[in-house]
Image 1 (cartoon, rainbow, N blue to C red):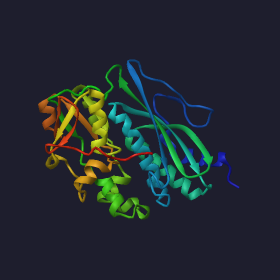
Image 2: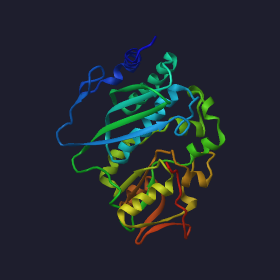
Image 3: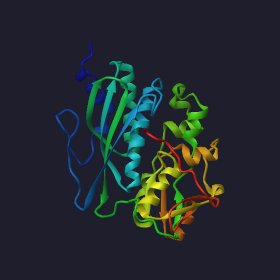
Image 4: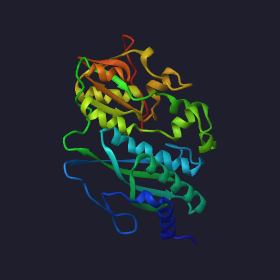
Length: 298
């Protein structure tokens, strides 16, 4: 019979070098991890829970579940302009299927490699399938990107196209996906790539920022309310992923690109501008009030 500790040992073995980083003194294997924050840096932290058949298909390949769980959680660090440093992963499993666990750990390790982040610990428990990832990163003291700085006249930009993941939910059998053959909208859903390098430059060029997780209009609405401004958008300028429709891009979510505002015209020109911050409140699309609906957890 496989024990909890056997499962943990197997996951740690699969993670390999993904458990190590200069700021990690004690990684997996003790009661808690021991880490350090470099001088002059602030620690940025967030946590996300992903539930089977809510945030991913329960029957999907475990490596894709592991990879996606990591990247959608790490996206919050990019939205704050932070460099990923370490994560904790909590896994709830209905049974100790060793092949599934190995594949999941491989997906987590691949994401950790791609994001240059260390997996320093976590937890395993029996129960309905779900994954919780706690993410932590560094940003120079006082330079974290917030939702509160947008000003009238700022350009509203995206770091990449939107609507791909939402399109996949409507058009692709995601449970049947295979990582080696992923393409198009299925790839956008399973292998999101938060723009960590861009996030660093946004610290000095962006006035506000948010990652697009619950729908572009809904997430932009959070920025507008926090900054006490409105937004004027052009539907023709919204960059849509291949195969996505406008509704997918505006309300679908799961894109994990960054939506940011900037008062630097030259910086804006190098990115995907689709609107302008305005005085007042509310979001306007093509001159009409926009329906800023998106994903709702309840």
